[in-house]
Length: 226
Image (tube, rainbow, N blue to C red; front, side, top):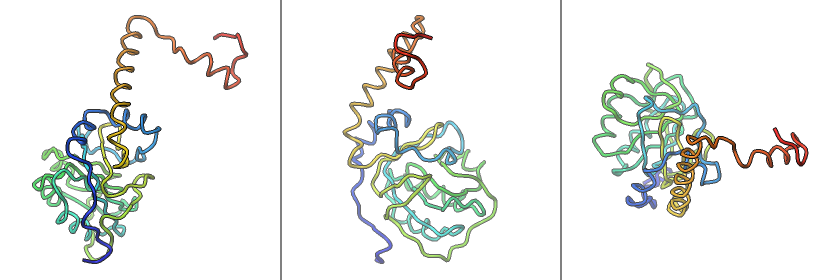
């Protein structure tokens, strides 16, 4: 097998994927240091769509989907195809046929820095797809690319095996080596935010940190208040 195709890499354990999937991408991005969120141009085909799984990375030439077909053949259940399509929207790289194959093989979803088509049919399939845009024009199938290598998608470097999660807010990627260690912090943040929302609903609307932050920013003088 050519060195452009990496077949074997460590994946996030299924139990860790299940636990991490219970959190919103926003929570995981926060506890990961407010990093790992893909550019907002890559969004869910429909707001209800959610995905969580292990990244299988694919790099293609703009407008060509040869290596995506190859990646589907190599993918394992629970994988998320994370495709560096160079942000090109002049041709769709995937449509109903390929998405149906992904769904049939048990993939967790597709994230693509590029365009897709057949959006109504994919919506009816209820298969999670996050893309930079749509285009009815079809792709070529002639150009080489890479599978399993690091890619840049939506401004974020993604390695094969990283944890990927998406919802209506967008997509977040967390390094495979870090995701399990972040779960306790994620659980604490959820609890803290729930407590804060409950307090706000009881009338405690003032942010306790605000005054000090305004002083530190030079907006207020020490001892001043809003």
